[in-house]
Length: 273
Image 1: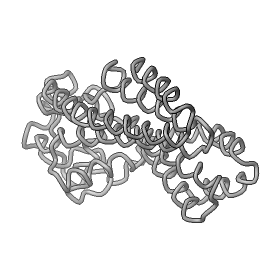
Image 2: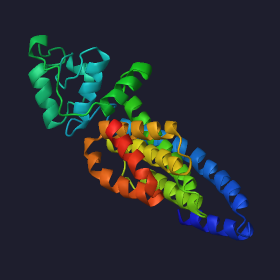
Image 3: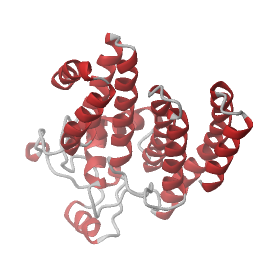
Image 4: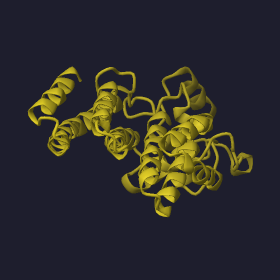
């Protein structure tokens, strides 16, 4: 990250603060960094999957999202119940809770359909739907979920860069560039964000960043499609992680900072969402 900062400062000097020169070369550097990080992200997902023996942890929320997603795949509407043979869910049965599940259901035993609660509404549907769609296309393998989360990190980095550029301030692109690189470094090298857990934080950040990008573009180019897209992105973020409702007041402040006359359309986007 420090090396990237030094390169950008050097770039500003050699371009003699010519903005088009800086922008063009910053994009080139960013593409190289992205191409480097894509295989790193995917390899990280594979390593996390190997560490857990291609299983979903059962000591947290991971296994609930997994059970929702697998049940959706098999047409069992919206339930966290063990409604299929236990092995179908690819859960880690070596933990205390996993052992309890195995003793209760066995590999072939499961609850009868009469006992299934089809409407477990305490989880929002966004993340299980993302998992279910990925599993439907690529198979219900935990590695697929970890690869999907890794790609969400990669896409978020791209969105951060373009959000900085969309601010249309002199060094907005460079601010987005540095923030994006910092985000990738946080994921790849610090271990603060990892792919062992199948949780909502990563996709929620991606959808929220997409909202920021679209509403920033709308501030400078008020087209209805951008507003609708922003509303859908914010809706997706909240459907993935419902406590993001708490950040809406801060998003309002951001919109007011962009342009005061955007407050009413933004409020409409929230209501529609």
